Amino acid sequence: LDDLMQCANGEGKANFSQITETLRNVDVRTSTLTNALGNSRVRGQWGERAAEDIMRVAGLVEGSSYFKQRSVNGASAGSRPDFSFPLPDGSSVNMDVKFPLENYARSVEADNDADRATFDTAFVRDVRDKIKEVATRSYIDPANGTLDYVLLFIPSESVYAEIHRLDATVIDAALSQHVVLCSPLSLFAVLAVVRRSVESFAFHQASDDALRIMA
Image (cartoon, rainbow, N blue to C red; front, side, top):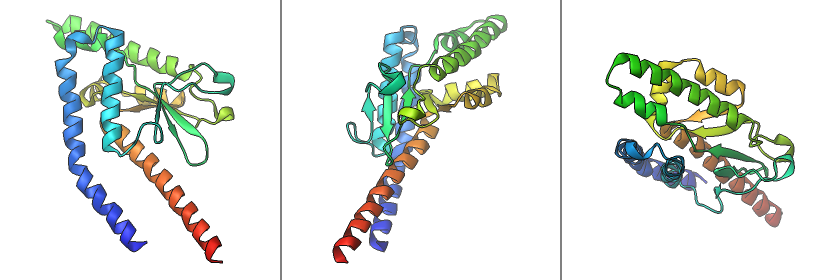
């Protein structure tokens, strides 16, 4: 067990150097796709790609560690979150990656302070509307196996920081509606916890099986 734990820690340190590079690439992609952000379909694809880059670094595998566009059951049947992550107890947590960035891009490109302030106000309103939309999409359905919160991915650290700068109450407002805003860095942290919890559960289950066989 000690050898296994040391090996796991070594792998974690070896992979850590990849995290910074991946997150840097995500932000670079942000600046190069500014002109495409006005198209909601392209924006959704970009968000999915950025999220999957982070999932790969976190060691998640599609089809086992996470699922894309998988329909949910129960009262929320028909809903298709962008990503869902199965947990050891049979539950799951859902994530939406489609995020409104039109007014953010307009604010960055604004020629004067008055226009920039107008677009900033509109951007904060877009963020709050998106939080409300995700909270009412039936992605949160504990009676049918989901956790009591949903993840909302913001595909850029700079955009995440700008939300905090423009309105420091947005995070609390999101949490009050059981929506967790995730930047690329915080998403990696969340997914790392998910992965470790799954591995720990599997390890303990295998240990129990071995003890029963030995007995």
